[in-house]
Length: 236
View 1: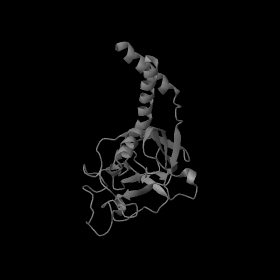
View 2: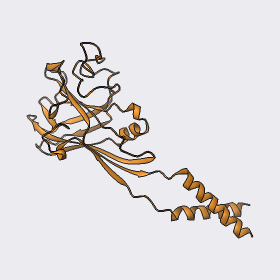
View 3: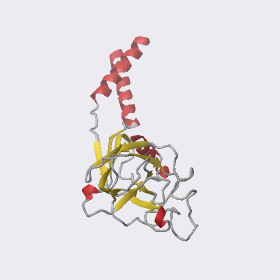
View 4: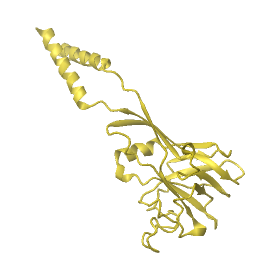
């Protein structure tokens, strides 16, 4: 019996080995929802401007930015192997490269309505953040899920590896509220291009995702049936 089972397993393994491996697919998303939140203009929305601004917390001029990519263009049943987020530096008066962490957002916000005080400006206090600037524990995760040192050369790009977050959002779309770009120690302004940039899509925020199809259960079942059939023929 063991010999027969071993033979069957060997046959199925051989059949699986003959199944062509699907090539990885790359998709580039460059039209996210994005906006800046500015402490000095606490009730002003910046969803239509051409930049995403960040500046050190704890100052009167504190600024953070929000970004969210729609992942619905990725077909169902895929395995995401990598996801890289990039921003193009438009301008800065910061003297050196700074660590810039990303924090997952925990509540919905509206590109055309989010302000320093509210996630959607439809009246003072109506959709207030738990803490202004989306700094509450119910607004965004306290711990960063990705960090990168920004390239301080104007026109260059900074890249964050956000694979783990994208895998989670793809598996559970309802949890995708995007993320907050929040500097650790940038004492001056760092100004990245937004999706409303200068008309050059190549300078937009980008999310580059690689994925491959997951083998369908029906395919694996057919391989097993084929193995049983071959085993039956050998018994005769």
